[in-house]
Image 1 (cartoon, helix red, strand yellow):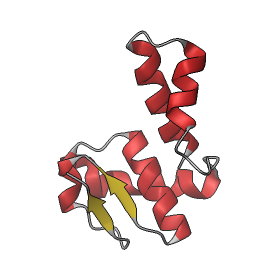
Image 2 (tube, one colour):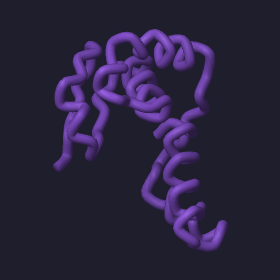
Image 3 (cartoon, rainbow, N blue to C red):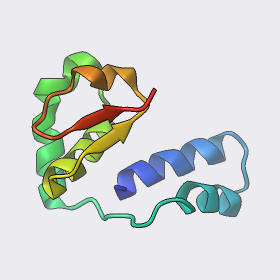
Image 4 (spheres, rainbow, N blue to C red):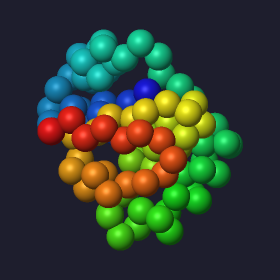
Length: 95
């Protein structure tokens, strides 16, 4: 999982009043690897903006897609707006 997405999850947990350490543990417990957001991913994420702007995808969303593109791996989301994303990798909407 991208470090950007871990930051989002962690931030939301802390924002909801969960203790910082507990929030970090909850955000990272099921994640086998946290991948640094690098220059390649930054370029991909920035380049996706014109394609996905109409869908309202955030920087975090684009960071997730960028990691999937860089690794040539599928991505998973609970955001139904992603059903219309076509970026050359499999996008699985889980609900």
